[in-house]
Length: 76
View 1 (cartoon, one colour):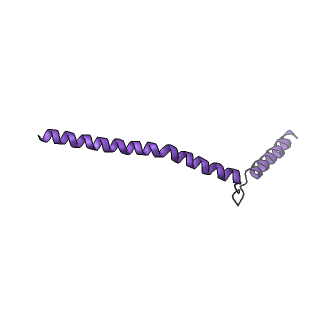
View 2: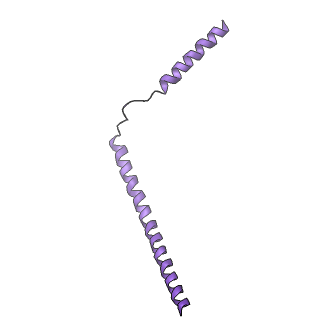
View 3: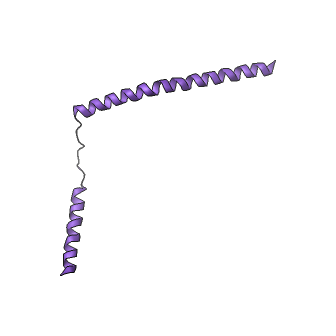
């Protein structure tokens, strides 16, 4: 009796587990709020990344200039 009850409960558990994990064929449509939030987030990311990238470029230019100066000093 107990063995059958465990078997039934195990089958029921497996059925519930498989049915709850089924994926929908069509992706969920995003609402206006989610789309607006994503746009604002992308603008924020861009406004943060742009100065960092500009600073990296300025550092590379400065290092290149320093190498040129050092090469000119050594050539003299």
